[in-house]
Image 1 (cartoon, one colour):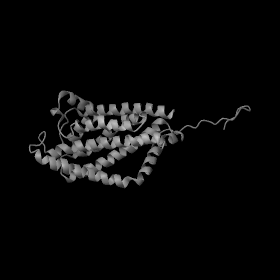
Image 2 (tube, helix red, strand yellow):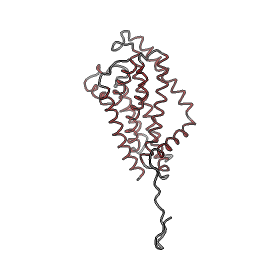
Image 3 (cartoon, one colour):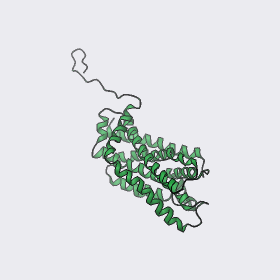
Image 4 (cartoon, one colour):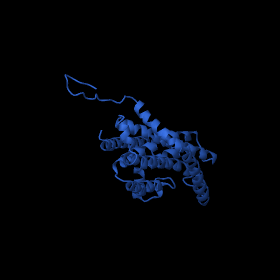
Length: 271
């Protein structure tokens, strides 16, 4: 409390500490909160890639006798599945959990009152999303190794790549989830953006076989860039586009989404 010349005492403003400590505290909150549910997610993280590779890679792959782009269908499919899994995990962690923290359990408001800065709240939660993406993709990579679908030591490069892919989607989806009033809009996002992106971004077949309009829509999506990089890494070949171009494009999505999320969070939290 501060009083000057008999004036009414006022509370001195409390400033959050600088550096990474506040964001790490937010990350710790999400990690502790996830301890109650990690077992169910761990099982699904293992079963999903296993069933997907058996169903698509070995089941459908038996009918693709000539392979795709000169490689077996399973080898073509696996890196696309790794990239799309990263995207789906990132979007899943950036939709209902974010909206819930605003509308239902209101965790973000409690964190803002702590006080934490907007980008501490976003940064800590995004770090947890990156952790979830990395853990799920590592399991997928392990299963792919058992199936013999990796053909280069560069396959290890998919681990930092999936984090970049996840953040490229999570940051703008954070902004979207903070902006929409109800969860009905999240279903619209999945129906008209995430599902078409997964189907037409080169995960299951080359985008060169698509009509020109859909092909350019695939090139615009961040998932295609991630798929091309992951496929080049697991097969040990050069990507269709330059590595630097892919990374810069995905980085632009991260930066743009980060700024949009900051604006959307600040509007909701009135900071």
